[in-house]
Image (tube, rainbow, N blue to C red; front, side):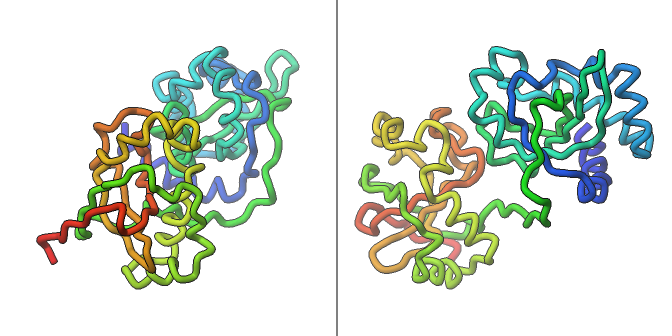
Length: 276
């Protein structure tokens, strides 16, 4: 299934470029399950898109419950997740009517939604039937830059966080020219620098540590993060906290993409890599 999904995703690129990006504005507009997409009206609309038969089959398959994130599974779960559902990046695929109600099938691409909370993050491209009353066009479409997963960390020095509470949680690395130059000098590309700048701010950390109030109860455990030195400048250092090395961390602290922590140099201990 994974190889077929990958082929389908590649084939859909041109189709998506012509589709309007949309935002889901009402959690209760999402229809549970894929019975509507399997229905006669939706099938006719899907066929009218002109997609090859194998891609039409994949639309129906990837609308099934086995692909739904847990927090989309039912009304109560969606209601609890309402503040986050509007953050999905989605595209109109086709529209149809069911009992006079207009619906649109929205594609939620997996690679465009890695920013979503773990319980809402799709693991494959997802297709949802959404009542039109709960959809709004997003800002005028523009070419989306490739999302960088961030800089390499395996050949970098390992760091231990000695003073967890001294993290610069709201540091605006992106606007610090000296910091950006340090990242460039450390071999990072512009997309990698942007990824570090974006995910070094608390608002883009895992749900359990993205505010001071929530983080306070867990801050002592920051010392358990397996971290690597990304770059240093002045009296600061930015640490890479990779997903691969932190899967055993508590769920509320576990990164779903590599995150970055800015500390004072005096708050960490650095162990030189043997590969250097």
